[in-house]
Amino acid sequence: MEPDLRDPDLRVFECARCSEPVWATPAGGAVEVRCGYCGHEDRRELPPLTSQAAEAGSAYRGALSREVGRPRTVDLSISPKGYPARPTKELLREKLAAARARLAALEPDDAERPAVEYEALWAAATLASTFVMAKDPLRARAALESALADQHAPVYRALVLARLARLAAHGGAEDLAERWLAAIPPGLRVPEIAVDVRIARAMLARARGDAPAMLDALGPEDALFGASRPVAMALLVDAHERRGDIRAARAAYRRGSRGAAMRFAGALATFDLAPRTRARTARVGFLALGLVAFILTSLPLLATNHVLAALAVIVVGALGAVVVRSL
Ligand SMILES: [Zn+2]
Image (cartoon, rainbow, N blue to C red; front, side, top):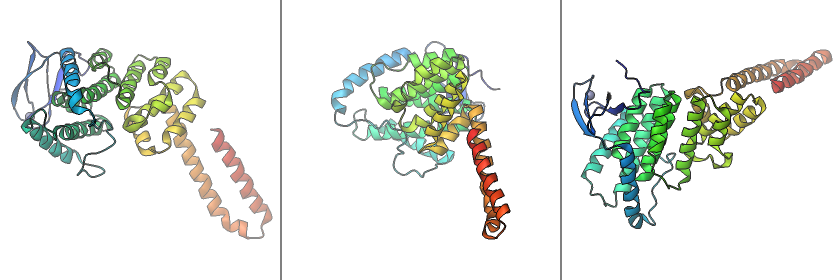
């Protein structure tokens, strides 16, 4: 049985033994879960999200003096040492379990701690992204909520909460998305977090069918940078398309394709964004390819004395190019 992921009271985690998703509604500040896969029974204390945020806020202020000159890595496009370019789910699980075990063994002020926390965050966020791409929101949610339980640094909690909000909004769970957003510790002036929060708010505006609010939430395009830029640009294309501004959608599509073309295309497909602009791009690509093939196969004609045939190839080629451009 699948849970209702739009239920704002439901909590979803990974089973501590087998990592499959477990879920329950908390009662009395704790949640009791029984894994449907391995039978493991678990009880987890759950402080309310807002008080966790307040706690995190004070911990941040307390930690500031210690952390001066030692800023935390917040750019999730930087993978920790020892990971291949495309880690498998199995490797991510293994590394995440190892990072959790190390965190449990380290003192709160151990100098190694921020690096291990970042590794746990990165592995969990990457795992969640893998599930989002595979259209498995339940496992993505479990990975992110378990990461939230691991993380105490406000900047890291904020990154996880923004992604939980993005996931909830994409699933049409508006109240839940609002709850995650409200739990983000206030006063963090970290550009990478701002991008992820903008994305979550834009996804929420999209769930409400409000394209102008999507554009407002995304804000100026030059602030959309880093690991989440492809998703932000994909949402920008979608917002323009929804407003009926196809020209702006195409222009944003071209800008989004620069640099991280694969991840941009992946974001469009993963979140089902901008279907018309995507279909047009596929059409144009197909026709352009056909045109190139036509000209290449006609090249021998150009080398002969058949002037008329050569002219015909040039005219068809030019007309084809005009048609492709106008689509
Ligand atoms: Zn289990």
